Image (cartoon, rainbow, N blue to C red; front, top):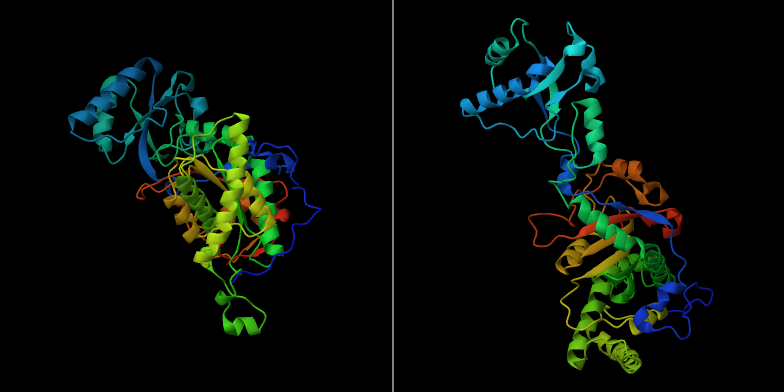
Length: 449
């Protein structure tokens, strides 16, 4: 039921290099790397807390010599009233006048500014003002207590930039390199350092795979690559939603259209299916553990070719899934990239996608136990990975969607499926901010990738 495909373009940058060791994934060396940067995805909880929950707090002017005494007295008073204090560890409790936000510098005045500090006493809902005034009057005698209120963020910042913004707008804040709403900064930095080595080349290869599938009439220009933690390519898959003509709506076909096609042949679904086939073939062949010896490498290469032939023959059994390579480039990658035996699903594998996957494919990535996901252009109307909320803006996935400002303006469905505590798996996620997003083509904003 699949359509005929043209021979791989001889002008492509992906011609194989003779003598390359397939285990070393020489195909990546033939790709001109894409230039860009990795932008960590924000979790749903991070987006929800990007605008801080604001509460009111008491601010008291105190002399430096009484600072610690007054702070301890206020905290003791709160505990004495059996009040559960708010956690203000993300805010500086005592500051100098020079550290005050600009908006607070005018209304607060002191008799002797050079001898004054400012104490963040407590949220206003914990103690009546009269009790706090009595406490301070006893310790600041003969000077009457000067107490004001100001807005403070209830929860800690999730980044250094956010801490800086809050310090200027509300009250001096501290970022302790801890993220209560998502993966920890150290975890992201370590993973990003590993990805940075090959991500440009892998995204370039994904573009070529997607372009070849589109030129062959299989589907839209979406490509997917699956690689292990060392950057070695496992499989590549282009979109194949139109490879089976039985999915063409009759009325649309007469008008030259092809509809949404076969959802099970989205590039992500095909790539996951190819990994599954590789694992099944390895299990049936009962291959020995990998070895670097020439004899084993030769045997492995031959085994990979046999595996491809078996896959192509058996691929017709599930014609709607197309979980076998179809295009010349897909076949080349599949044959040259044997998978290590003994693995489980897509555990310890990373997936790279030219466009943000739809909700169905996002959940498939999650359930397949991938370690990391990287995608190129955002799909605000259909994507399932981003956590930003849709602002009712009709969009088209083009260069205009690239960049942090455009990303926030475009919004999205708000699922943030890569990191949801209520689901049974979480993975790290990035958007690849390509220097030339025009290379990714143009998809309608309502396209499900």
